[in-house]
Length: 129
Image (cartoon, rainbow, N blue to C red; front, side, top):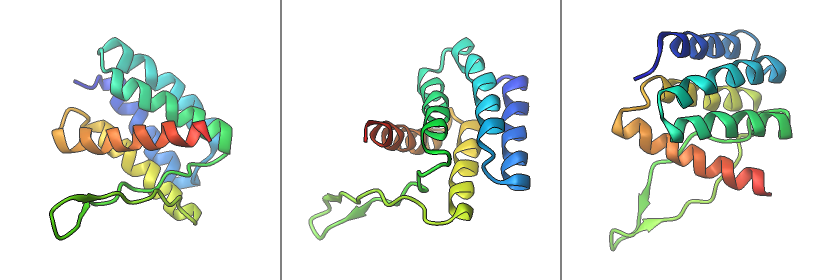
């Protein structure tokens, strides 16, 4: 369950993204204020994703994580591994971060949780490089 305060913080992040784009200091501050709410509600996945997002923003000065791609399957039904391609425009970066914030708003949803996990794994890889 997301707290009312966490909900408001996420909406503020989304408003900032749509108004001014990725203003790193402002977004990072909001994320740092948001993280304790997910610690409090004992949601380690989202807690980690929020931390990884602000660490990524601090390290790269933008959000270089693209929207999760649909799984592709070969003729035998095996999942084809798709290489992560970072967004190429500021609009794509904003769209991806805004989408992640929307997923977090309803982070208990099974499908949203799966996409949040994809973001988490991609963020971990980006910070290791």
